[in-house]
Image (tube, rainbow, N blue to C red):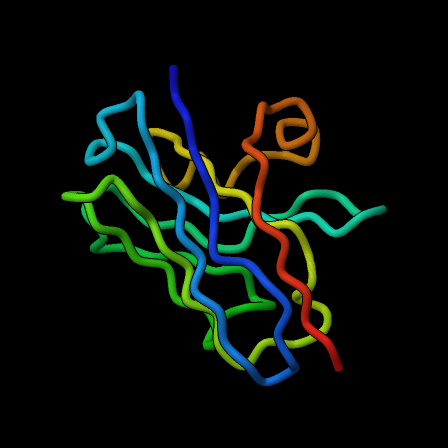
Length: 128
């Protein structure tokens, strides 16, 4: 059974930084692309960033490009999201997900995201 456990969230002032982690188990981690998604109450869950199995390719939503960096450590079955220059609109619960390709993560529709089973996520709150 695949288990993804997110951590590292918190309360930070605008302009600050946080580093999120997602520890994976129950899958051959080094063969999966990983992604980060977020959801603010009352809004749809949205794509944030993705990384391919080797870490050689990364993809970002336009809203976070240049501020967030996704990375992975296959020896530790963990994916990270370094978030810099945080803005109040980055406030959300952040979740990670695994799929066979980064393109498959990016292509998930709002319905796919609603129907998918997610972990508990980690809350990020950015104050102005």
